[in-house]
Image (cartoon, rainbow, N blue to C red; front, top):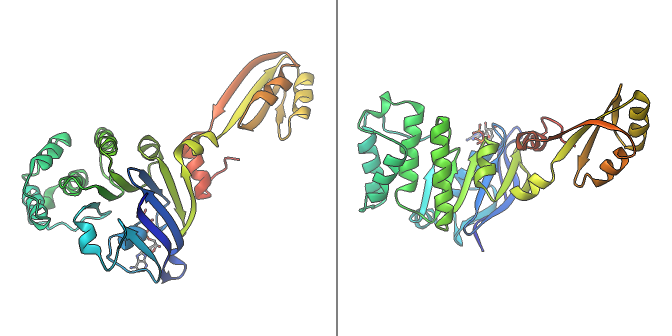
Length: 295
Ligand SMILES: Nc1ncnc2c1ncn2[C@@H]1O[C@H](COP(=O)(O)OP(=O)(O)OP(=O)(O)O)[C@@H](O)[C@H]1O
């Protein structure tokens, strides 16, 4: 069952800016990573999901309700972490959190206290004097304290140090265990790899792919390097393997999927050494961005 549905939306800001013909869904209990370079259209899409702007064409629904006309009802059961939080700088962090809790009609503040403890947040000072990381923690507390079933998070770990990024990943995994549905935009592929079931990749306002993280992993290529006993053997092996490169006694080949064929070819020669390099998920990520190669 889909909780979030985006049907063929276009929001055209002119000059090729905006989002164009974007469609994807987030299933119940799923964590979907929304990835893309700066200016790709992640925030534009998220703002339409929040009902802040209306698409020029297409529709968005959350739990079957229209994101624009029924935004108020949707937000009763939704946690939202904006990319840039509109703080009231003269307030203390604690008074801001209480202000948001009041707005949401939240009476039980137990979860809020748990979250503050989890992120080691002392929010008693004025927001204007806080670091970006502290402000981000306040945003996280505000998004999760109501214990909503659906969460929309725009670059949730932005500004957090590595320790706090890990805490955030723990929190996300806990929430997933508890059946929450989460859409999370990110620049950090490792974070998406560790937490998400699927990734939707957007570039220049257009959706490039929606893939299972498992499938992305299995689609990665490996670079295999053989060192043979002679230059002659190396040249003969390279001639058997399409696309292989040869340099003196070394043969380098790229493989996607099973390595069996390549190993059988190499076993006809005397292999002195062998090295296998698996493309990192980040390399794969760059491939989707069009900024590198991972063929
Ligand atoms: N209100 C607006 N008017 C005109 N152009 C806009 C408006 N909002 C966003 N844009 C442009 O639309 C494009 C998509 O922006 P968006 O903020 O959605 O990207 P993003 O993927 O969230 O990027 P980032 O990772 O930098 O946050 C950008 O080129 C941006 O400048």
